[in-house]
Image (cartoon, rainbow, N blue to C red; front, side, top):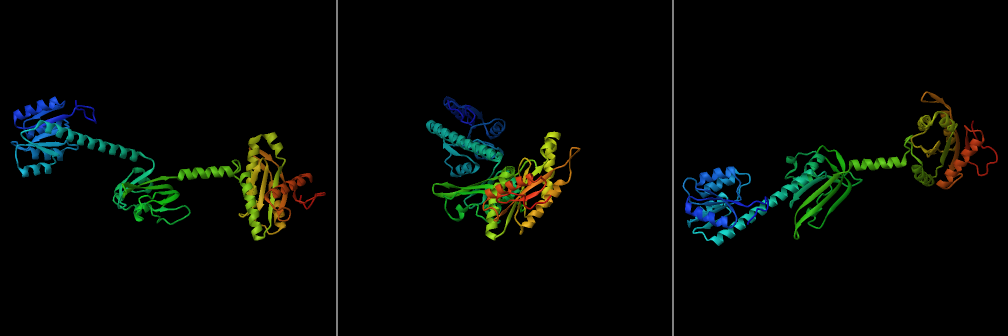
Amino acid sequence: MTVSLLSGATPVILIVDDDEVIRMLMRQFLEGEGYVVVEAEDGHAALDMVAEQSFDLVILDIAMPGIDGPGVCEQIRTTMADPPPVLMVTALDDEKSIERSYGAGAVDYIRKPLRWPVLKNRIRYILGSHRAKQELELLSRNYEMILDAAANGICGVDDRGLISYINPAALKMLGYKNSEVRGEHCMDIFKVSLPGSEDFSVDCCPFFTQGDASIKVCYDEARMLRKDGTSFPVDFRATPIRQGHRLVGGVLVFQDVTERQEAAELIRYMANHDSLTNLPNRNYFRRRLPQAISLAKRYGRILCLLFIDLDRFKPINDQFGHGVGDIVLMQVAERLRGVLRSSDSVCRLGGDEFVILLESTETLEGATLVAQKVIESLNEPIEANDHICFIGASIGISVFPNDCSDAETMLRHADIAMYEAKKKGRNCWQLYEPLVSSPGQSSE
């Protein structure tokens, strides 16, 4: 039994002929081949039937009273969204009628008297071709539905670079309507710039302009212009479509990576900043200090590092709790920011330890002045959760190139000087001295 590939049902064939004997013989033959057969005695009856029922094939006699075969065929083809194929049957040797039949949309014709083996194979071929066409259309619709639902922007272009398809995600990202881009050249819509550049004239499909069907485009972290002139970061791919060695089109795929970049930036920020105070952290400082020393060497400048350890901070944590201690640390961070110039930086190393890097100070006196301002600022009482807290700071100062030549030594010398300041009684600053036997220059 012959079965429809799409529905799994037995194909249904409509026979339309005003000759009752022909209809009877054809029915007997087709039912013997496993088809379901429906009969109509004229064109009007046939049109009523196709309007009410689906058929896999219509076999039409060309010469019939009323509406003839070509007339019925034309109405079927023009009034139905998915018309069945039509096979014309004729006893006439009339070239004009045959041409009318093909012009009306018939897929083939067969002459009377009918040769049953010819009819059988003609029907198999027509049904097979029609089913293959339906399956291809269904597959195409399914692919288009998948592309329409994709989150990435997808665009198809023909062999001239004209846009033949673009999905909703692409339209949304670019700010266009479908009617504004279909048929337009891809270079007029896809304006791409490479990372670090503001030139949006990059060729998005170089395989057309260079005539090389093997070229594939892959731009990561590029930027693309929207219709309104604003831009957004994208990962962009363009792939040629080939038939044999001939270039017949291309597919453009792109993804808005704004959220990915923002997430990466947030991760980088969190890796380099203290979550409590939002100051740069030890990780950032370990990279920044060698860079600052390198610049100081290049330009023949001094570089000063202040190592700050808070006085009387531990009793605040012990007495009032870590919540109050955290507020104190945040207030300290704000005060340290307030005493610095934009060219200088402050970092929290951890706990109650901070460092200040002075890159624009031309004299040692400038560093000691900053240290004194820090002490005076931190001597002011801090209010935290209805508690008044009093702290101070012990500060050690190391100077490049006076007492060190590298980052590790500079940090160690500033730490040593800070401990000397604590030995002196806290709440003061101390310059690093190679062999400290007595307190150096300091300020209470």
